Image (cartoon, rainbow, N blue to C red; front, side, top):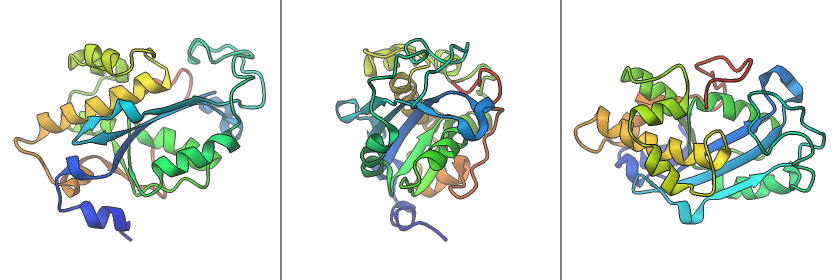
Length: 222
């Protein structure tokens, strides 16, 4: 069944749709059912451009110390999150920003699986995957989001959009994903496509998201 948001915006330019880029930093897929969210960011898009003035980002206290691992970004391990809000406090803020919106992520199925498990109140209208769209265009790098942004000459723009953040942290990666979507869409279509066209190219199922690359080891999504 098509979500009402998707139905309402499908025949309109993708830039008009209620789009929100999102990224999570977690303890890693090797934790399986115990995987915890450590940081999250969400940035809505206005006219296809990230609206950084209204960006939301927060650390999350997982309720336990986080052992140092090579794929966990600096500032998120050990007891660094002891004073951060618990996910139960964060979830209503996320729901207000993400529910009934179209979420954009780089290999979005990975983040959505974790978010869906930990925050059952989150109910997006649809998912768009920049990793999938990059693969369609044969520009996807197996080394992840940062390398792909570099290949498309977007690093400077991401740094300007998230000057207080850095690669492999939620805010930087979210801004990068938002900018990447616009760049990939412009490369894909000579004129502004309708939302339905973009969903057909890089949509992922909300009910059963399937990550396009492995979530094991250091997770090369980011």
